[in-house]
Image 1 (cartoon, helix red, strand yellow):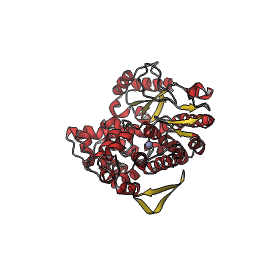
Image 2 (cartoon, helix red, strand yellow):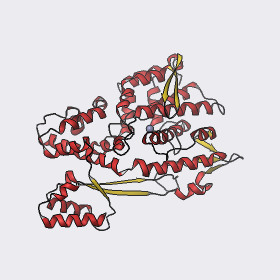
Image 3 (cartoon, helix red, strand yellow):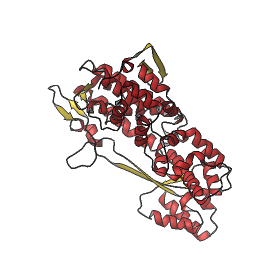
Image 4 (cartoon, helix red, strand yellow):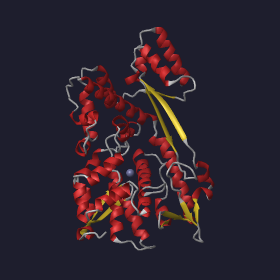
Length: 433
Ligand code: ZN
């Protein structure tokens, strides 16, 4: 495919964004500049990168806008480096830059919990926004009629150019390299630090993937460890998950009330397409975290006690207590039954939550996952899967770690009238702790 004159157009002067992680983000292409200006991309300013994690780490308020520019910048630098090893035509260059910039375009507010409640999928919406009747689509179409589709295919990993896909999504890609450093910077922890400069210097383009020069192995070890630690110390933080739990329950209640015909003081206008499952791209784009927060603040004043209480708790960070749970002494259904006996509705005042992570793995014959290994290139040109070369990486390869927690409001338990049920629940919670 040929790209239009517009696709090759450069800005008369380079634009730079000051960035605390990469220092500067450089924009020379007119297309990139025009994409940043679209309303769908600007919306990412109103979606936090880490959802409710600011409830645990108060500075973690950075947005998907920050992160998207960061991923773009890393990919831009990869292309500059790769051009020393092989030819890159401007079409592939522009394709990977646009895909990097737009890879998270479809994220909704408080992504993970929204997706579970409303059954939406940010990847599907990224595709719909790129291909639909949007400002982003209009910009991409000026590069070439098929260009929006190509960008969407790179993001959903169906494009025929596997090298370009692996730059944005693989086990060592620009997306992860940006979010680990950025999230570590904004939470104030040091776990996410690794030597990206070194990694960029040892990355080499090959036909199907980005490979790592043998001498870069230790830098990759550091990167994988940093990812492992960030997951358990930051991303799965139980307090942040506690925020998601409240949001989840408040929205579950609002949806229930809407279905029951309850008359809201502040009708959930922007949520109705989500509740009713009639969602269009434009409905989806209208809901950002500002809007969600607005409703939760308003719902504090609703007559429905449950909605009012859950909204109040979310807005004012009055979180549920949490306990570890492994299912060995009692089942979830039995706990729910006990709560019900005590007059505490487990539908809204109890939540069990599980997370798991696999820090590094690769496909073995017969496995169902789709993980491509990280390959090291030896001096003689031979490729070796990295865990066969590094004892540290070998030790975490295929290691699945899971964590489950129970969430409940302590004071509701203490208010239970029946002393026998109350005693039973308190004993149980002590035993679980
Ligand atoms: Zn991302």
